[in-house]
Image (cartoon, rainbow, N blue to C red; front, side, top):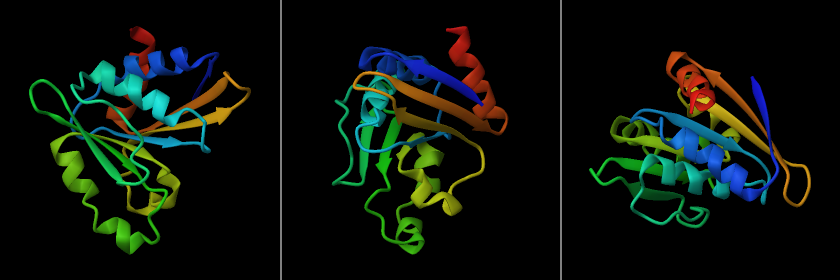
Length: 153
């Protein structure tokens, strides 16, 4: 597990940008953190680094946002906060999303039993008005490669 301190929203966004440049279809990034922890800011950078041609917004009320790259490859941004049961979550089609593109999942702890084991898990913790601690762990070969790639950019 790695721990990174972000001293500003711009630094949080830049970390997302670095990781976004490495994303491939099938990658699952789980973002855990309280409201205001920086999940959407991180995702904005991630989508930008990935090459999104669509604006990024929190999917809290729509559950899943779709962002597209120039070539049409999808990047899914899902918020599990309002999911009330694992049965409801199973109907959403997480496996289908991962078959087509990468998935950024906010509030993953609510549906963790349904998630693939291979994933990157980021926990964002509010330290002060601008400072965030970001703990990153990887489970699986591809997720570990993603994490190592952040340091190489």
